[in-house]
Length: 246
Image 1 (spheres, helix red, strand yellow):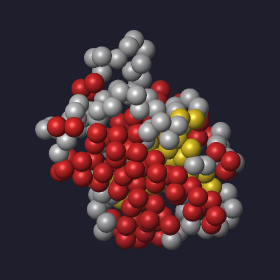
Image 2 (image 1 turned 90 degrees about the vertical axis):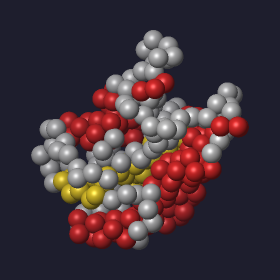
Image 3 (image 1 turned 90 degrees about the horizontal axis):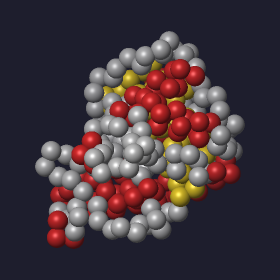
């Protein structure tokens, strides 16, 4: 049902995985319409020959909601795929906490702003644009460490808490939009450890073969998304399509 997207909204479009997803979508369908949202000005997607509309906005800010609503109205073609790649694991002064004593209120709130509010605000902006008979696939890039059921190691408090919150948002969204739309699928997907700046400080301890290129992660995730249908809505998925516990 969702295997041939005509218009894709790609948020967090300046990130490594998002760029790779855009390139993968263009490789599969060069004429696809791409709507991109990021803090920057937006870059050309290699191989893409279709229409491209870009919005510079900070999705962690509530005033972005109105900007995106206006952007979507101006674009006139509603997206039938939405992929939100916004996320934060570390910055120049903060990283994942190893213990409770390392937790800091400001860093926790920043993690929530980037890992959760960017997805909430995009959903709120899209909410008024939804058409009951328009098929919609929504995918948020999440993380396996945000799974409560899969947590065996502890630590990484801010990242785990904010990603667990994102996972709950996805579950709620799947229920609400499942009632409103005839054909919708809302999922969170874990891309695996991908060679991007987000994972760079943590790559040295990985087992051989467990670090994936952005192109490979993008290809595998698009493969999974193309196979989804309404019955798959409300799941947290691994990059191979298998279901992870919430």
